[in-house]
Length: 476
Image (cartoon, rainbow, N blue to C red; front, side, top):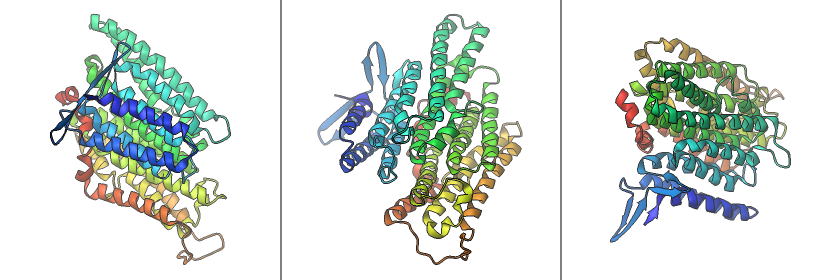
């Protein structure tokens, strides 16, 4: 008899502690984290529905519940799809983390943070996850702070907002007990709903409580920031849907779905406008996160029309887009010491770094939903739902696309512009990219094309993300 909690939470935490002890041995620690994260992701994908692995005459039975301190931690088959995605992100980001000169603690803390997100999603009652989410923010500090320097103002603001959100969720949990005994107390329900929605707005970094996000993106390594944002966005989005699934009083509030739809649309338009005026490449990463969060909220608001399917078909495209953009940006910063991170400093980079330039642009085009790229099926799916929403959101969505396209065209213009020494646009100069850069960039680009041309190949892997949400689908 084995336990899923031990496999996907306890063992990864133990591995991360081991990696902390051996972090000076770079090759050994990298090998351990790649093997362990790859194995955990594959096992989560391949685990049978009954949680019994049969090897010949031997049966390995996995229990789904682990009691501790009067609370339950539960990982069922329905949870394993998202868990597999989280550990897959750990695997992808660690393949090149050391070559990008990230924090020396990246191997250990990336595994630990992924395990903590799994714990936050598995603890019951899951309102206790608020404390775990704050702990995750604290664990992120060594990754976000540059080597040999103290935490910047963006990191401090990030921790401050996370600290504010935690008591709001716990206070709403205290109010929930009264709601169960007095379901007709509409004023109490409204106050609890406001607390829950405000706390999630802070966790999601929604406008206007997003100010820490571009600051952290500017201060910290792009590869590290993208990893933390991918795990945070994926986990918190599903965590919010858990709230709607668990509490009927919340999902039955009048106009809740309308509020979520318009909140998502505001995020899409606002982030797009901010992107169009952006001059620093690192901050683009932050606003892309807000852009994707807007689509996530829009899809949740369209849950009654089937919008939740967006969450499963966009998991891999978002991961690939974040990886492609942050990797190309990190390599450009590392390869060109004089690159100050501003868009105008990209002039002529395509002639020296063609592969990185292509991946940089294609990642942004994928986020925009360009046909044949990874995010196109997900964005197209949401657009097909809008005509039935009855809110004329298509116009606002078009405005949102315009802002993102502006920043993309600005970047393309700088990349292909003639070099400062008046070199021709078509340069015969040898590329400065190494074989490792070419291989990793090509794999990311190829996966984006495959995910866009054959979305069914990868969406089947993540279809289990929606398995726990039966009550919401009943409403549709």
